[in-house]
Image (tube, rainbow, N blue to C red; front, side, top):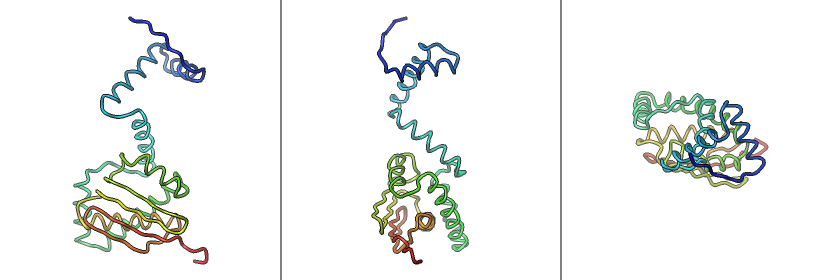
Length: 192
């Protein structure tokens, strides 16, 4: 066994000692586990921050009752329901958008925080690209890679429109293509 001396801040030393005590292990084994874990994360092409973001997003998914579903399966189900009963499909996604909007607002009470969270978690979300641009009166949402069909794009668009109502924005224009959407919104005036 090789002995290595390291210098850490008082705060980090207390954290290491607390972790070791709480797990019933030595300081040395606690540090060894941390180094091995970081090494595995980096060997997989990630950074420690990616793991932390994934854990935080997993907590949000749990609150929302989200389960992972392959994009191709979800697209097929949405397309089939849309073809059978377009109104029912749209209504389902409107209700989902409202629920998601309420949950989003508890984690991100305003668009600044929402934008920050979207950037932070963008690589972990089920879309290839998510962009939001806004000022105090206008909002633009652009998503790509959200499915393969017009039905999936349309349903995603109505869900997002409903979610943005929670932030007091009303949809004014939508551009929908297979796999991508662009939505424009305006802030509801206070006299509405």
